[in-house]
Length: 87
Image (cartoon, rainbow, N blue to C red; front, side):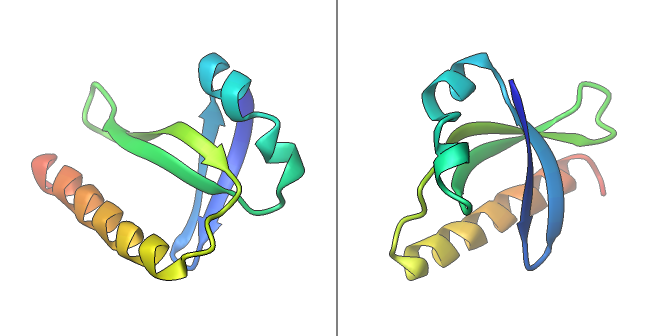
């Protein structure tokens, strides 16, 4: 297991790589100072917060436009999660 702090222009979030993800991508967290992370936002069982489950962590792709479009899709998904929880 490894803990990561992810940051972009909107803020910071703490997450961790669990065993299988760490086994697959842990070395990338040492090789690259900047990572591209694929993750899912999962609500807590008590619906009072969220967990960010990292699925992939690796060298960033060079195509910035794709990353920005994907970021917008993630914002929409996060908004949808907040709507479902009534926030």
